[in-house]
Image (tube, rainbow, N blue to C red; front, side, top):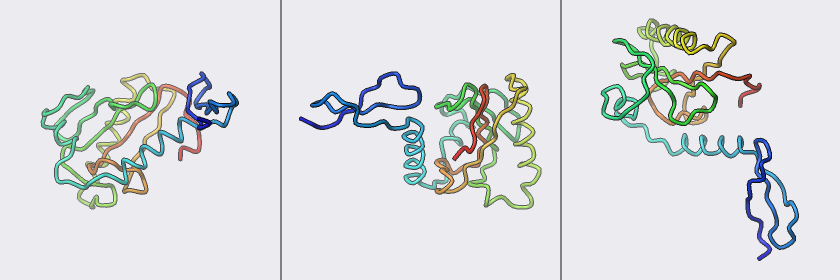
Length: 161
């Protein structure tokens, strides 16, 4: 008794915390902050493995909503979208993280960006979109296979982090 419990009250992007005993508002917390914590926790818990979920998607061992594919890259919808349009572009040849890319990867990195632009155009993001690369644990990288997040379909806020 007397402990605060979370209840959703329809507040935009926040959750109200009500004290059950008094019935008074004890505070609010941002849903976005909670989601960010979850991403941070995922990144901190990520294990750098030789095979990743993206490798399994490339080999068609697990399903994905593929948007574009050629011999070098794959684009597919994110399973947990953070915007009305949210897709990933990955190289089929694994590069674990951006900081490990080498000079010989220049063409592949360019191909990732050009594919992101092509797919964004095909999905109607002519008003703009954001391209995000999470790199390393502090950058919230939770899958150690280089990937671009493309987010759009609404006005995005700034700063993002």
